[in-house]
Amino acid sequence: MGYVRFRFIVAAITAAMVVVAAATAATSGSFTYSGTVTYVVDGDTLDVKIGLRTERVRVVGIDTPEHGGCYADSATAAAKRLANGKRVILRGDPTQDTRTVTGGCSPTYGSRTAKTSATS
Image (cartoon, rainbow, N blue to C red; front, side):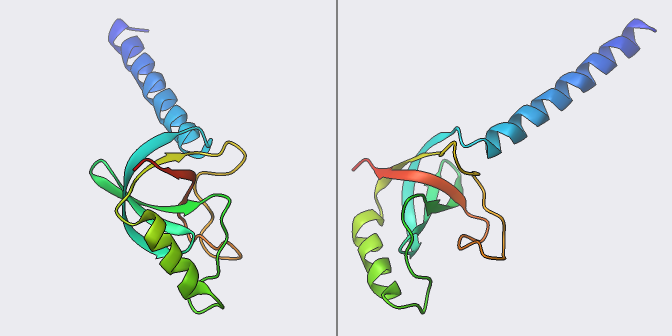
């Protein structure tokens, strides 16, 4: 095997390993991000600006009624008072997937799941 072909194969394997490692980290629950809450979707879902992107985040450990459910408006109002405009730290929970399955019985519709705490 020629030297150039060998280097190409090594580069391809390295690139594949990086992609697999990134995919594993994205679903492993081991992440920490900080950002600012830009919008409160409902009582347990926030839009958080992290760098240049905005992530929809389902807050782990809180389960509130969906839009139209009993007390949903109260839960959303409370979340707005507590979180809107605040700096937050998001920590992945290693016992849960970091992204939920869209549809079905999932209440989060593809949101990132994270333990969330306000910093200010």
